[in-house]
Each structure stands twice: as C-alpha cells, then as structure tokens.
Amino acid sequence: MSSRKRIGILTSGGDCPGLNAVIRGVVKTSGQLGYDCVGFLRGYEGLCDPVQYMTLTKKNTEGILSQGGTILGSTNRGRFAATCNIEDRVGLDPDLLEAVGVTVEQLDIDGLVCVGGDGSLAIAHQFHEFGIPVVGVPKTIDNDLSATAFTFGFDSAVACATDALDRLHTTAASHERVMVLEVMGRHAGWIALHAGIAGGGDLILIPEIAWTFDEVCRKIIDRELNGRRFTLVVVAEGAALPQQGLVATNVEGAQARLGGIGPIVAREIERRLGKETRTVILGHLQRGGTPTTFDRVLATQYGAHAVRLIVERRFGEMICYNPPEIGSVPIAEAVNRIRVVDPHGSAVRAARALGISFGDEAAPHSPFARPTERCDELRPSDAATAEEVEANADFALEIAEAAAEEALLD
Ligand code: F6P
Image (cartoon, rainbow, N blue to C red):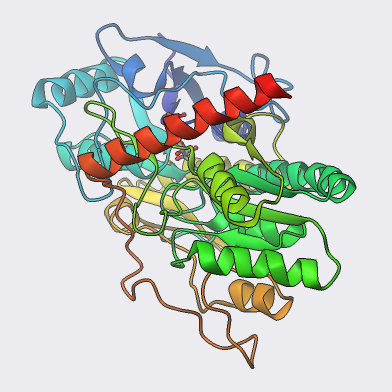
C-alpha cells in the first residue's frame, strides 16, 4: 500500500451530468496536494461486503470532464437507502456503519467525498455522526437542495428540456396542436420553470402553485382568440393533479416513483376543448448526456473545494454555492430542508409579466400581482396516499389504453 495519504470518493443516488467532472476535480486537486485517490463503486454499496473500489489517477480519469453519468457507477436503491420521503428518514443498520468504518480505516482513507442528493447526503450525515470522516457534494437535476443556490446537473437538465420545447414548438405550430411536455422535478418545479421560460412555454404547471384545468383551458382559449392556434404546456412530474394529487407508483421501501401526469393533463385538455393534444415525457433523457459549461465549471469547483474541506478537516460539511462564492454548510443543515420555487419570486413574476400562465387564477390587472398560494410553508409532501396512487394508476391506465386504441385507429 502507498505511504501517501488517501482520499476516497463515491457517487450516490440518481446520476446526473457533471458527476465525472467532480471526480476529475477531486483526483486532480488531491494529486496536487500529495494525496492518492480511490473511487468506491456503485455508490455506498462499494464500501463493504464486498468492498469494491478502483484507484483513480490522472491517467484513468483523462477525458471524463465532458462525459455524462459516472465512471464509478451509482444506485438509489439497496442497503444504504436512508430516505423514503422527505421527512421519512431511515436509520442505517449499525453493523453496516461498523463495516464502512473498517473499510475506511483499512484503506487509510483520510476523508471520503460523498456526492449525492438529499437522500444520499442523509447517509453521509449518519456516517459523520458515527465518526467516519466525510464531506458532502450536492448533486441533483432537480435543484431542490437547500443551502446551495445551484446543484450541478440542473443546468444540463434544463438545457435538455429547453431543446425539447424548441422542437415541440415548431411541430405544435405546424399542426395547431397543444403539446404537453412532462419534465422531472419531484418536490420542486425548477426544471419546468426554467425550461418553460427558456423554451417559450405558455403554461407551466409546478408543485408549488395550485392549478386547475379550468384555468389551463382558459389560457389555451385566450391564445386561440388571439390567433395563436397552438400551445406549449410544461408540467413537472410532481405537480399534483387538482383534487387527485400526485401521479405516482408506490415502491416498496423506496421513494414513490413519479411520472405520468403529462398524458393525464393532455387527455383532459383534449376532452374539454376538443383540441388535438400530444404528450412527451422527457424522463431520463434529462439525466443523460454531456454536462453544460455551467455544470462543468460548478462540478469542477465542487470537486476542488471538497478536497479543501478534507485538508482543513472540516468533516460533516457540504460544499455549497452562494454566488459568487463556493462555501460550505453542515450536512445536517442541508438535508433537512427542500428548496422549492418561490411562487412570489422574480422568475415566476417575470414569467407572469410575459403572459405565461401557471394554471392558477390569473391576476386581472397587474401581472406582478401575487399568485394563489398553495402553502406558505413551501414543504410539499411526496407521500401520495395509497388511495391516491391507486386512483391515479387506474386513471393513467385508462388513458394509456385509450391512447393505444387511438394510435391503432391512426
Ligand atoms: O431526484 C432526481 C430524479 O431525477 C427525480 O427528478 C426523479 O423523480 C427521480 O430522480 C427518478 O429516479 P429513478 O432514476 O430512480 O427513476
């Protein structure tokens, strides 16, 4: 074994563009400071039973800056799942913690960089409490981690959704159709909001603003009356249906799997207005591909500063971005609050000023007037009740069947 000190790194949870840029940032910075680097495979799983890792060098991380995904692999399932819903934390098995401690000691790891979202950082926090030297790096395309203005991966996801809207725009206009684009965003509507603004969306439906089909249809009719015979709707997967709540499938021992609200919205628009409507669910396309310039810069800085935290022995802290500076906060602080879109914030108000509707009651006189509030607390719950999930699943199935039938008729 090398006599140099070692830094460990792992990537956990859902992947996103920029993970490799963090890995490269950590490897290059560690090398400059006289550390060796090892990467644990498949997220936290690689830490024990069996221990799986690879030595990371400048050579074997060459060219990964622009690659999507993670060369170390990742998982959001398995023995280290520490969260079911936002407030539903699960304590890790003490034997597991013990085994991780042994690995860290045996491999002479001076500090472990855990790159992950809310759930993964909740695990890192448990490691810290157990005495394992960890630092956190925030990642998620959803951009919903409090304590950091941006997580890397978000900008790339928004770029993907914006590109989809640009493409939908031309075909929607040609066919005079309504196009519904469903994007990711479990608890927060950041992707929908930013892509909707960047891609010229007409209606943006997000979890933070209660909306109704009446208002959605009213906006479409208004456009028709003004000679705009097509409409682009962007809907976040976590934007609850009026009365029916989240469209989700419950998964045993894990977070509910969201998705499927887009076709329901499209179907209802078509039913009410008799207007041809189509849906695209963008899904995991938003998580793949090459990171944008912004995400590369952010991820690289996160990697370098994570090494700094280890050198400064600031364990239990997470890197964060408070523009223009990269700082850090206790991981505990970062995992307890979700950062959602402010319905009164400047982006929403600017969108309204442009005439974009959020599917809520439009302010008649001032576009800058306050929208209908969903809740002051800004803590949407991920927990669809079993009845909600069942009802929505039935509804979604009905719609999928009808769509399949229609496709056959076409
Ligand atoms: O949290 C990031 C995210 O991409 C969410 O937007 C989405 O709901 C979820 O992960 C999907 O996870 P999975 O890859 O397990 O389907």
